Amino acid sequence: MRLHTLATLAAAVVGSAQAASSSSSGLQSTACVSTSESSDQFPTKSEVKHATLFGIEYKNTYKVLSSSAAKGTYVLYQCGSEKPNVAGAAAYIPVPVSKSASWSTSANVFLQALGVQNTLRNLGTAPSVVSACLQKLLEDVIAPFNEANETATDSQELANDVVFNMPGGEDDPANTVLTAEYMESSALGRSEWLKFFAAFFNAEERANDLFEQIEANYDCLASKAAAEYNDIRPVVAWTSYAAPTEYNNNTAYWQISYADYKYDVVRDAGARMLNTTGPQATMFDSAAAFLDALEDADILIDESFVSYSYDDLMSKYGVSDSSAASKYSWAAAARVFRPDRLQSAAGGLAWFESPLVFADALLQDLVGVAHPKFIADGYQPIWFRNLAADNSVVIVSAANCTDMYAQLADPASQCSKLDFQSADAADVAYSGVDENQTQDLIYDLSKSEVINDSADESDSESTSAAPVRRAAAVASLALALVAVLL
Figure 1 (cartoon, helix red, strand yellow):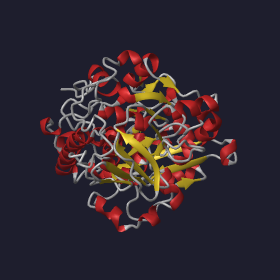
Figure 2 (figure 1 turned 135 degrees about the horizontal axis):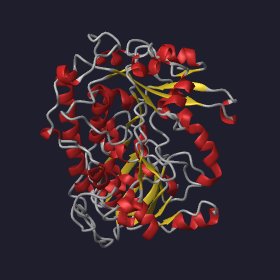
Figure 3 (figure 1 turned 180 degrees about the vertical axis):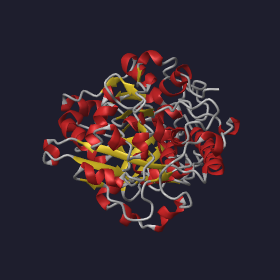
């Protein structure tokens, strides 16, 4: 059985999915109350287990949300109830929210996964949106922010109950909520931000149920990968090339990413990150030094801002001919991938959307990259394509959407129904580091040795949404910084 045909992909990732959730199923306290109300309005509560960058505290008629991206807390009080007075509050927002907006492509998909996209009124960076049903909503229902007119943008933002954004914008209105899901240090931590977004819509039941499914499926996949591939772990390097521009002093550089969440998900996929026994350099000023660092890699995942052809990328990386390619396992075996298989017509990448929500699907994809025959007839990744094999991209459009208001389905297969191929039958020989070296060695290093302060956040996929508020004014700078931030 091939897990993901284009049809199922369109249904699960780029289109809509499970049962439509425009009903009130899974929502609590949907009606406003009187100012004298003091009973518990939130009997279903969320508990944070994996995420480290947000927290939730429940009171009877309000909730206090903290976010590492914010200067204060967000106080969400049941509509109609008395507005509380909480020290350090950055914003007071009545819930459940009925009108929302977002500048972040990842926040958009969290809302869609919760089935509350019916509340969306405005979206920023519209061309970057890949989700088919969000594209359909933009065509038929909601308006993009008028990024060419600051006054119009201000009016649009203030007409909403809440505006989700990334940190770094200027002159954010009082109803702005800053999120940091893309900065989390684990894949499950990123997914658990479902609970953060759900709090604004009193959708804790939906968030808890969905996250429990994602977590259980992730743990099952990790367990099976460990059982089958513990002794055959290919070495994975996340790489990128930045061409000379005015933003980098017209000097090209090469980079290897060591974002924390990548360590975890690569390990759980039955692979290992490059160079786990000593402090790693992250940036290189010559292709030669960069290639030296890649000597032990078996698989490259290229995250260059520009999508080069395989031949062009090899040229940028300094691999000029077949004899040079034969020196490197990843080049000789043609195992060079990019996470850009699903795109919008304007070049927006689904990589910055649904993988943040569905950690189990991300893990499944990486198992497929590391062990391509982990199921009998091969695996077609959702977000990754083999650049060396000239795999084509899939352009997602509004035409792929069947129900704009359906709750977005988890595109991962149900792990309990997957029969992993044994390592002997499934894997090729890898030329990387000693097979006896375990992935646990990475934890012998302090994070300060591996990633400096400036690289830490930037390796956390801080380009998960295209430019923040006032995108038109900062777009050129943001685009130039993408390669630096990956």
